[in-house]
Every structure is written in C-alpha cells, then in structure tokens.
Amino acid sequence: MARDPQDFLRRWSRRKQDAAAQAKAPAAKKDEPVPALPPLDSLTFESDFKAFMHAKVEESVKRAALKKLFADPRFNVIDQMDIYIDDYTNLETIPKEMLDKLEHARATLFGRPEEKKAEAAARTEVAQAPAEPQAEEPQKKTDDGAAG
Image 1 (tube, rainbow, N blue to C red):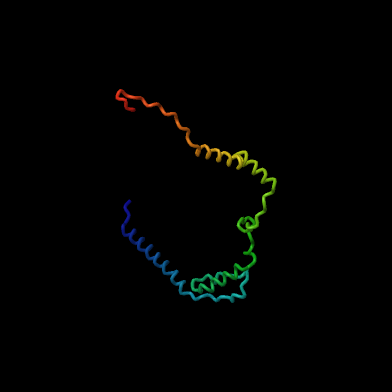
Image 2: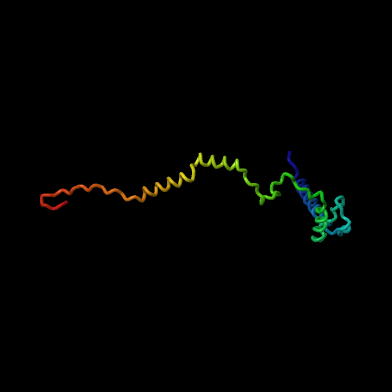
C-alpha cells in the first residue's frame, strides 16, 4: 500500500498555509479601535470592566478602573482565620499560679539557682586550692657519694 508522496506534500503545504492564515487573524484584531469606556465615576460592582482590560487602554485608566472595583466593601472583608491581624504588642501577663508551676518544674528539672551558685562556688574553691605537696622521695646515694 504505497502512498503517493505528492499527497503528503500537498497536505503539508495546505496545513502550513492554514497556520499562516490563523496567525494573521489575531493581527487584524490588534487594529480594532479602543472600545468606548464608561466614565470611572459611574462604575459599580455590577459594571462590566471587560472594556477596561483592552490592550489599547492606557495603563493608568486600567488601574483606576480596578481601583474603583476593589474599593467596593465586598472586597474589604477581613478573613477571621488570619492570625496576623491581631495586635501582639499588648501581651497579657502570665497568672501567678502558672508562674509558680513553671518555677517548680524548672527547679525539679534543673535545680534551684541558689543550689547551682553554691555548687559552682564549691568547684572554684577546689580548683583554686593549692595542691598538697607530695612527699619527696629521699635521694639515693651512689657509690661516688653524689646524689643521683
């Protein structure tokens, strides 16, 4: 079942021409005029903002329209799950009972600070105490009478 290579080339050529024609079609859309824009003061939440997103509309006009859209109170709802909105500068003090429990736990696990100071002082006294002199071994005399 041999196919004619001419059919392949014709089909390839036709597809290439179709692709080129489709590429030119969006270029024709670029020549479209800017759609008529409603005044920014008349925009509401229900207004159609699609015309402001056209490629030929100035960036400042686009931004002004979007600013008007997002100024609506429906976009200004604070998420109650947001943990970063709280004021953490006013911290509540820890209750006395909880502080007592924490102090007890610290003393149980790590010892009391007074005990640690006493232990440290005892260690420094031991380290600073002069070493006891060791008894010197008597020197043995050799036959020559010299100590050696």
